[in-house]
Image (cartoon, rainbow, N blue to C red; front, side, top):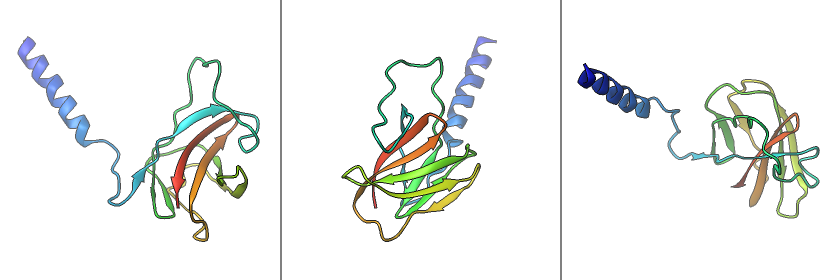
Length: 127
């Protein structure tokens, strides 16, 4: 009986590796960090006191200037911040939107921010 349970558990773990969210070829997964902030553009900082549960960041990838969400998500405001800390782009991302086209005129390194309420998910990207 123990062997059967162990074998079933091993099969489930093996299958779960194949059921992960797909990443499109040529795209880069976004590795979100989280911070709590009142204003993400002007001095939002890291979370100093950990809340009971941090919000879950969305699964997303970036391919050139296409941001793709791999699962359902909340409504976000997207900010793109340049190396000088200046906001160069802002847009609303409705709930469960699957793709967003970032401006093609932007080139270089940027901070990508997704803000919902007081939570900001961010990562550094190159466009």
